[in-house]
Image (cartoon, rainbow over all chains, first blue to last red; front, side):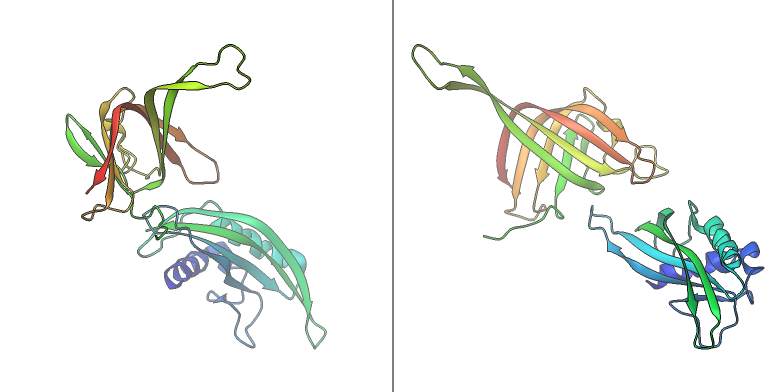
Length: 134
Length: 138
């Protein structure tokens, strides 16, 4: 959903403390980071959700997985996650054409991936429920 | 026959101040008719039997409360304070010609609220039937 993706991107790239932990001020990507992107960075993507069909007003309840990646350590990825949390949990997003009445973190996720070059990539993030009303 | 959902529901409240549409933010409208019964079981009866007497009914409407408005949205609190009398008219399939319409004199029992920490805030108004319910068309 473009309007919501744009709102989340703007919120994340507007966070000074978060940007200070990333490779660059624009190291925030939707769905996946481009090949060769410098670490650390943030990726956000839709996990699920959709229309509520609850009342005549159109409402959507979306789940976004927002996470940070670092090659340094789990703690470094966790620090990025903490800044993401500070920007999103119980905060209001500005979504064109919609009003955001709930943004709350629901699930914590951490893991490590090993590349073919035997490098560890640490991930830390969470799933956020984002509810909007037209 | 075709089943249908409540998405086209139109509900109006008519009182001394005029007619106001109270649907728009609703999630459900319930109506439950009832009738008083007199027990006529006697003698060697082995099962209870009843006489029917007076008809009655209750309606209840739940809506999502709208932020930043004094009246909370289309379910207008100022017109539905407890004790307010009027007529509730609901059209389950909308107000196009020939669609069914139900009309019932009613007393509003007032707006009740629910404020969950992590979910949508709702308002619910109960209506006590206050006379006959009529069934017709738009």
